[in-house]
Image (tube, rainbow, N blue to C red; front, side):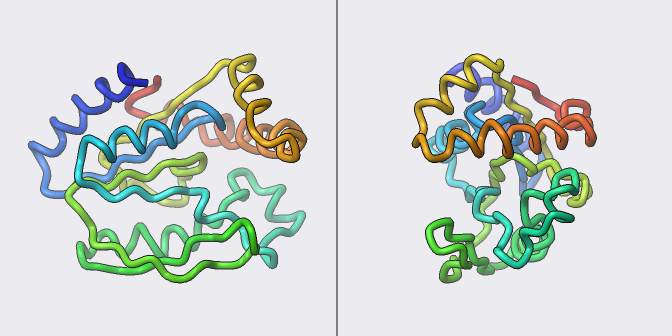
Length: 186
């Protein structure tokens, strides 16, 4: 992961030298290292990190129609309204992360935007967002490595990864041509 972070750091440093405010989105397959890369970058920079996992669908949104929608496995509308639009103002704001243990929105988190913003998670390159990012990174992983990494996670999640989440992600990557929309693919 250090070599991946070095490649990304070089590009971010260049952008930070050119702009007052930089937003980087890290998309990719589950287990490809999105969260790890975001954490590594957070160690290197004074930055904000937002996780698409904080925008899972609330119970009332979990309909067959929504799950049939390409890229519909995330509350992209709420992410846009609560994070992307307020970021543009440069002023402090708050948002409510999704709490997977209660299936509700957690208490608000207040954010003061930094010069560098990292958004990590599958669906972060969703075309619904338009073009808010200065750099779009796509992380990939081969099927066997992905399978092994999933099997290291809690067993009660395995079926959902293999039968639900991975097929939905793959539809999203293909339908929206996410690799074509990314500046860096690692």
